[in-house]
Amino acid sequence: MSSEKTNQSWGGRFSEPVDAFVARFTASVDFDKRMYKHDIMGSIAHATMLAKVGVLTNAERDSIVQGLNAIREEIEAGKFNWRVDLEDVHMNIEAVLTERIGIVGKKLHTGRSRNDQVATDIRLWLRDEIDLILAEITRLQQGLLDVAEANAETIMPGFTHLQTAQPVTFGHHLLAWFEMLSRDYERLVDCRKRVNRMPLGSAALAGTTYPIDRAVTCDLLGFEAISGNSLDGVSDRDFAIEFCSAASLAMMHLSRFSEELVLWTSAQFRFIDLPDRFCTGSSIMPQKKNPDVPELVRGKTGRVFGALMGLLTLMKGQPLAYNKDNQEDKEPLFDAADTLRDSLRAFADMVPAIKPKKDFMREAALRGFSTATDLADYLVGKGLPFRDCHEIVGHAVKYGVDNIKDLAEMSLEELRQFSDKIEQDVFQVLTLEGSVNARDHIGGTAPRQVRLAVERGRKLIAER
Image (cartoon, rainbow, N blue to C red):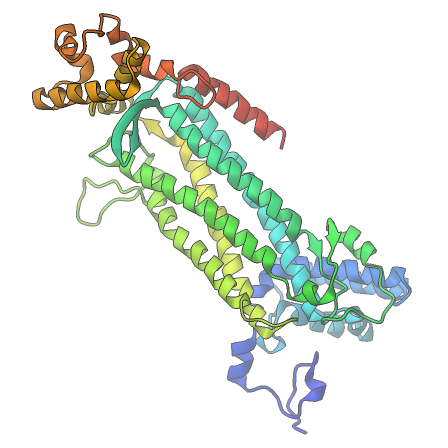
């Protein structure tokens, strides 16, 4: 047998050390070391449980717990020496623990495997990440509510097909993003329930012969439930895929929001201004102010979509139970969580600082015959069928296009050439204010409804 050192966690079976390149290729410590806190948390709970059932003595438990806490402090101080030859975060911590407290350190792994250990670590890590992400969603929503309330009466054009459709209020438009984020919040809360199930105790794949008490470990780690099958416990990554799916939807929403911010800041729209700290300039065009934060978030969306597809592809061909393929679950999951959290943070910082250019918004709403539907509704109120009204207004719009006149700019005589049902009161519905105020129902754009929606939004957040 070679005298060269092999990995102490499994080296007894092997007659030669792993090739140096293969060691680097198969190691995960460079990226999974970020789970050190959760790995130590799981190990402390496991040691506590082993002492409770009599597998460890209280003194052995205390020695392990003290050693692990000291290692955690060392890692957080940046003084821990991570070794690639020890493969991953688990063996790095366990090896140092054993070096320091002796044979007792080797007893820590009794009744568990790296298979259920890593599955537990990932869930503990992702649970914390979801909580951080939920906090950022709430912060962004609070900013949206504040800006929406301040702009409950600020009128802008609403669009379909990116063509002027009907007047809406800026506050109403912002509250559409609040609704999307509320669904994102709900999805992540629901996803967290399935993340928060404990696989520890599944061991390698079949459970363990030691008299473990999984309920004790579950309670210590704050899990809501215990995995019901050891094979599934070590190999399930549905929770990671589900998270990336929810994250993809959230990033899709932020990307759509980004697209609007990019349009709104352009010289062609001039609807809003973003503070300089969220923008950059051009190296050759001194007049440029580029909305880099929204553009970058729009671009980063692809990373999260890629993580989702990567994890689906990773899992689709795996037989039960654990396979080395699953080492590839962490980097896309980590990246998706980081990207979503950072994107939300950027938006939560930026949105409250949005400055609407109300005059430009109003001017844009006055263009494009945005009150055409209001004229049709007015004629319906005069007893005409809607389809006839639609045709009448279509002729009026064509007249306006030919004469470069908005409906509200036409005289009563001009309007009456299309229908003798039109009277002086028509101008009450052709104004922008008349149009938005007429949509006075739940979900409508009327300023009163915007303020009520803001109240409901704040109540929703307070009840979380």
